[in-house]
Amino acid sequence: MVNVIINGIAVRVPEGTTIMEAAAKAGVTIPSLCYLKEINEIGACRICCVEVEGESRLVSSCNNLVYEGMVVHTNSHRALEARRINVELLLSQHDGECSICVRAGNCKLQQVANNFGLLKNPYKKDLPNRIWTETFPLYRNVQKCIKCMRCVQYCEKIQTLGVWGMSGSGSRTTVDVTYNRRIKDSDCSLCGQCITHCPVGALRERDDTREVLDALRDPDKITVVQIAPAVRAAWGETHGLPREMATVRRLTAILRSMGFDYVFDTAFSADLTIMEESTEFLKRLKNGELKDLPMFTSCCPGWMRFVKSQYPQLVPQISTAKSPMQMFGAITKTYFAEKMGIDPEKICSVAIMPCIAKKAEKDGHVFDRNRKHGMQDVDIVLTTREMDRLMRMQNINVFSLPEAEFDSPLGIGSGAGVIFGATGGVMEAALRTAYHTVVGENAPADAFRSIRGQEGWREAEFDLNGTTIRCAVASGLGNARKLIQAVLTHKVHYDFVEIMACPGGCVGGGGQPIPFEQNELADARGNMLYSLDRLSPLRYPHENKEINVLYDTYLGEPMSELAEELLHTDHNS
Ligand code: HC0
Ligand code: SF4
Image 1: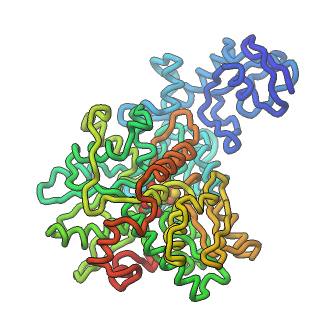
Image 2: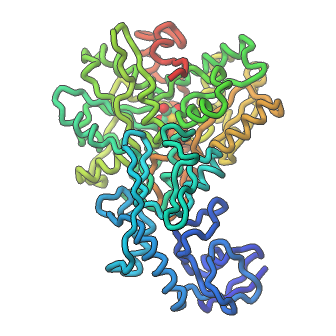
């Protein structure tokens, strides 16, 4: 242990503790713009500089360790002056257009500058000038980048894609796509983790709220909206709603009050995905197709983009089932439209997702149900954050609206469908139904819970009527890469593998609310989904009566010709 004094407060901390961590233990906050524990500890922003007695230079507190007897002053005149000048220098290369920035009120730079009470900047503005088009789902504004390196390090170290890097030199040094590529030509998975880890508004999703507003205003459009599992675990965070108030039923009421004609649950089509995917899995297992390589889940478009760019040879091993979002769209424009007597061309299918990659996924799936021109399953994808902006735009009082039920007939989702939003949830849900198919009765709903957890790569074996099923789950693309390398070099063997691009699964998705203190919230949000499952009266996808009616009256059975046409894909798009 080491004894240090910080702003006159004595603390005792383990060796290897940074000054910033020791200060936190003493109850002293040191601001920082770039620090991310174990990911970005490079002291790039210089905002966390402090004065250490006996040292001639100020030191960055995020990456300098304490030593016995160290005396630190975080708020000395020198430290504060240096911090203020560093903020002013950053502002001289920042557009400062806070009122038209998506991160206004949730921006670290704005907070630090405001805390200094800065009223003007003595330095001349010198803004880089590279304009991005706003057609790709991920947008970067170079005039807001503070070169903190968080996106660079997160993409490299956690997602192992290295999409971002430094370019230019001297005062022109900035962050850009590596190898001088355009973002659309890079290996970007669109996981959006660079956005959720950006301290300012340099990175954001493409804003599609206007398209939704246009559809809501159009009297000829029937607007159908689906709410993804993970959205219910996070949407209330920006409104300060306690978790028990931020229910999916309240969100249903809000969306209805905005003018959506039908509000449905993606957990419904998550159950549908399970019916299809578990059937496919059992078929592939029986046909001996999984002897060498496992079947992989297909529902995460971030993972799909990753596998297509990094391991294209594995594409045949991926389930052909479309994601729940896409299945939902296809069923809306066929079964639902027919049932309700609606012209499918008039339907505008909107999906509220925790995800950036879903904005690209929706463009790749077109079905052609006896038409000359195919229709898109889903027309518009909004992230949880964009939905939040719509609410604020319409001054919705989220506290006052009473809860409401989903519409029918696509409104019932099982607890198994809800846990799709947490890492391991798809696997657990699939096993509940696969077990029932093979054994003819239900396993206890929690029989497969050993696959849960936050470790990036987990494995478990389950017995299905005498057959051992070897399963693995990974979240975060770095973990996915490790798992795939082990599979390809035959260090491990699995039958069924679930991969989600975002650490913790969709609950930690790149379109979710961004917590101001950058605490990773995937764990807490995932636990909320697991408790919704535990409390649900319906926990098995195959017992969902709306799903059963869909098969009995329309699709026939899982993997029928019609189901193949509407609900499966060859992954060529
Ligand atoms: Fe997900 Fe999904 S669980 S990918 O994260 O499978 O985005 O929440 O909607 O489609 O259901 C995202 C979340 C979904 C889909 C579902 C799956
Ligand atoms: Fe999107 Fe979820 Fe995949 Fe992240 S884990 S890329 S939020 S589908």
